[in-house]
Image (cartoon, rainbow, N blue to C red; front, side, top):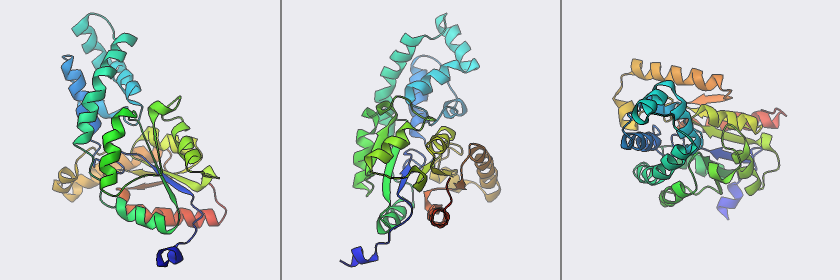
Length: 275
């Protein structure tokens, strides 16, 4: 009864969040390990910077984009005597799925601050959704691990469940439909990648980008904490600028900093503003 009395209806209907780098896996390391292991198995070394460039996309599309990068494209040609074709992409993706599942299982810890957000949202009756460039098969263990840590989104949508992944808005729109949202302009998309922010903007939602915990900085929490303040700021600013250019309404270090942004969005919605 006390809990119900404390609930306050918010003008915000829903918050939809990415997984790796936003709510779990500080530094978004699992996809990196998966893609590098995949290409290494085929005798081609890809760098972390190359691997991170298409991040946020559906993973088969990610493989296609990697293969179109000039250096990797040439390395494949040198190795196999011809350009990679659709059959090669299909085979790479088939091999990638179990590698990615294994990598995700090692990187499913919740990012600090998420549980505080969930408690805040529950008091205001704000729905929580999630979406990802991972396939449905890849997130089975992740959903279970997150639930054991206290995170169970009311809707989860994978890129393989819609006709087009990010930056198309279809995952966000599916989240909204599954949660019974009335107004897309009363929703917030939180993500650590350019395609993820573009997805939210294309859905007509408010967008919040995370930098330090995500793909653009690309360091684990312990690696980040080992840097001096000057090095941290250099990486933070570079990530902020990229995500601001993508159209993010707000840019923060991590999910731990998101509640003040949501309060500000509530105020703006109450005043009649839209994204």
